[in-house]
Image (cartoon, rainbow, N blue to C red):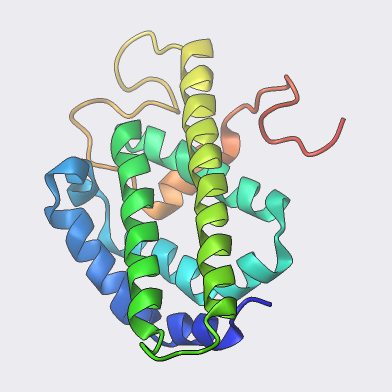
Length: 191
């Protein structure tokens, strides 16, 4: 059984975890593109993760994780964040969350079994996250290639190089219009 106490502790400290993570994303040179993303967008995303962690882990719904993180991958592609930085950001998120959990476990805890299960579940969750983020990123790239712009800025999927990163509303509208691969491996859960 996954430690519900630890999940509640993560949810209780979600604001602090979010702020600490955003500070890293804004200062670490391995994810420098995150500095150009709107802070409110990052706060919303990480709050969603930390505050809904129990639901994500207890339901083990791969379809929910797939949908959420395919969308994130597409958004990061449209925001021109390099895939390596997106993956690094997920890795940092996972590491910081696991460090928080390890620090929260009492040193003399006789029954660390549920906490260990939580660490394993979080690791498996982030393995899925990285896969679906990469798939969404690639899907947006394929959509972009299938609909090349005649000139910079004319494609609804590709902002021109002089434009600012898209706002949440504009980004969501573009992501909603992206064509989804019909090959059965992206965005489809059944035949």
